[in-house]
Image 1 (cartoon, rainbow, N blue to C red):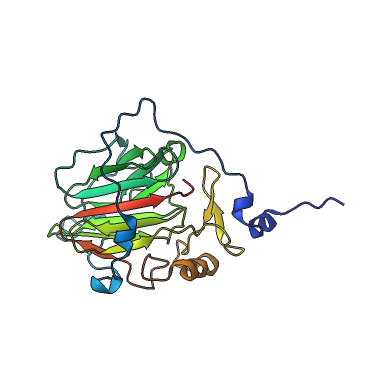
Image 2 (cartoon, rainbow, N blue to C red):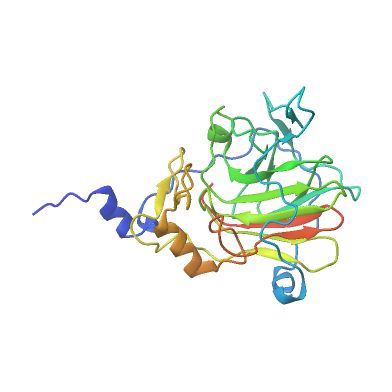
Length: 281
């Protein structure tokens, strides 16, 4: 007798049983600069987390993109949301503020940088070859995030928030603040560390996408099954994905919701390294 499986039943079997859509490659004629040295992930993660300060928020600005002005003029935007995106293959690294991005996946991958509260169009994006590390410079006062993805959806002009976020901002003293956030979903691991010599790191490298319980998955607009958002727009909690992520990662290495742990670190020179293992962009 033939039985038809519902979508929930398929999910119960694990998303690994579902076909994975083909991932777009980079734009034509890639021209990246030479890769920076590959980071020593074992040495980074070997640093005792008790040896450096961790914060629930610190001076990280995660959402708001306005500054308070006088009552006569009201709040003022720090930036205008982009109407088009800047493609870089890797910026010149002269020791200024920014992020090293290591693509630890098995092919070219795209990474998209958004200002806070500007979800429709990325400010800048970069494609990086498998195993390569490139630098992206960021301006003073930047507040935003990086996500993995593909041009078809990320440059479509509609918000694509489902997935792992690396959040970063700079305070008035030029100190960088960063975290890995899974509040809007998880499409794979992301590790970050300060490049100021403090040894501070957060994030994770293990695969947490398979084996989650029913109610833990959502589909990206390009067809990739990922862990769904742990919080809804009204602040309510999706307990199945939140509890799954806590069981796999804990609460101090990444934001699993807005209420647990101390997943934020600082970088005194405004520079971070990030490492992105295979995921579902």
